[in-house]
Image (tube, rainbow, N blue to C red; front, side, top):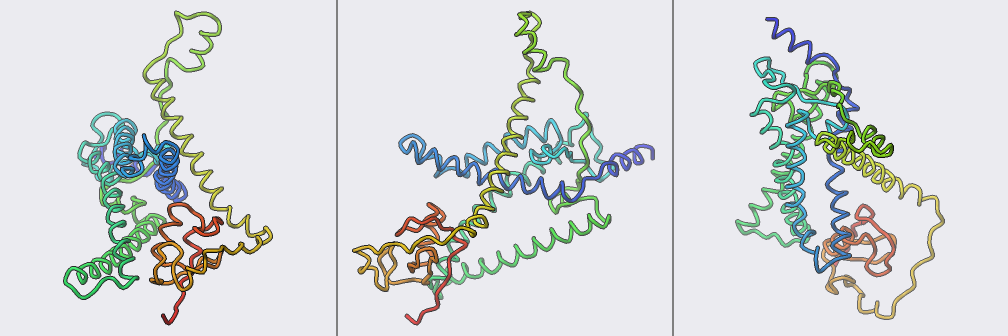
Length: 335
């Protein structure tokens, strides 16, 4: 009975706010696209040596994410983003008591790693496959064969499952806000876990300040560099780097609003060879399939051609003016 009461006390104390929960989720979804930009830049600068990294980026990130998340789950009982915001995972079921300090039970640790690393990787792969099928459906390339009908059914089923998943997340968060549930997210509820504020860490006997002070004063025999100091430095570097990534993404998101106040640029100059693009896509030079206009330049493209190009380069292929996929407008023409 005392063990159960102690468990309840530990669980209910320091319940994190919904702002902490949503912030750590936003941080977790920010790191991968930010690192992708870095990999794409390095692949463009060193195409002979690093072009393969862009092609295998998902697998490289899977390996890196698995190492980082396992380290944080093992030593801090939290994911990387949860630890950044000072949170720790705790079992709701009183039978799942911590066996060795702050560590999670082994089965919950492995299940948490699967939910943090394995399932997002599989979802990204499925999203890419279904995105390709949706493009084929929009272009009218899916016929009435059994394989095409199965693809159409898979698209509808996946859209329904995504809707159900998002509604379930909203319901779980609402129950958490009203105090009816201890789990703020759907994955934590499925694992039987909750979040709480992490306890303060025990101070290390050796610090970086002591190390630098001893080196500067010439007391080299007293200068100690411990493994825990190196780990804490790497952790601090990763967490501050994640904060910088969030800041840059916020700055990038507000760039369109800031540029809206600028005067409109002059219309692009016509090109001599644009006559061969009459009623044709400037990228594939074929008749339009799902005609789509890019407002920044006024040219009409195939939806698949221009969306892929914008995801890759972020500019109009004709005028080189900056553009995004969100600005595309579909045209309904009687071709």
